[in-house]
Image (cartoon, rainbow, N blue to C red):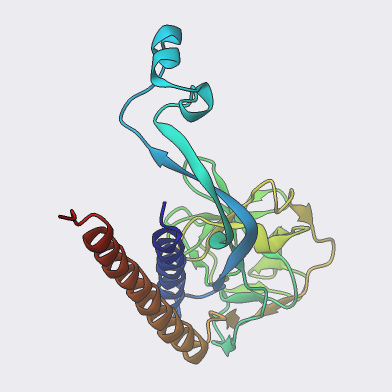
Amino acid sequence: MFRGFYAGASAMLVQEKMLDVVGNNLANVDTVGFRGRVAVNKSFPEVLMDRIERYTIVDEVLNEELGDRKFFPYIRGRVPIGTMPLANVMNETAMSQEPGVVQYTDNSLDVMINGGGFFVVEDGNGNTFYTRAGNFQRGPAGELVTHEGEFALGLGGRINVGEVGQIFVDETGQVLADGEVVGQFQVVEFASPTYLRQAGRSLLSETPESGAPALVPAPQIVGGALERSNVNVVNEMVRMIEANRAYEAAGRTVTIQDELTSRLFSAVGRPTS
């Protein structure tokens, strides 16, 4: 086994995932309420390596004929070949909690959460999502919806403003239509919001690691303003350049390992007269 191949390939896979994360951040730099993600790598003292075979050992007699059972485990197509110390792998991606840039629009349906928390929305199938994007609009039936069509949820369900002329959202999240309270935005928080899973451009869904949503009793809402993406273009471009160079360096190590292996086979495997 040539560990150089595995070390180089592992590094290339890590940088490839890093480029995917950076590319997604840059693609959503103008998305309202989007929070960038950060790739988290983990270095293990030892990583078990295996190879994938096309066969599966399921017969007891055949297993004994082929060799020791530890080399032919009853796991389909996987055969352990050893450990590799100091391997670096992509562990997870975490959501950045830095606030985005504030943009004042003076639009009565644009709202922003000042501080922590997320708006609660649901799609037409009843699936619940969470978002920092507060650029709502009035739907065909009078409900407040996102630009993608998800319904904004209040403390009593969907917020319906009807066909009124003037809509106002106060600092507590209450929605007033022509001076009458018709609902209040539901704002929730999580114990570990960095582990929320991205479900759309600005939509998030809970995970076991993020914990269950808890209602924010006194949210601070700013009307006529939006929270833009918190992605820093300069930082993301630097990460992209670093990932590209690291990928190229890892690729060169694989190429060098291949050349050295070829020379070794040519020298050692050459027949002597």
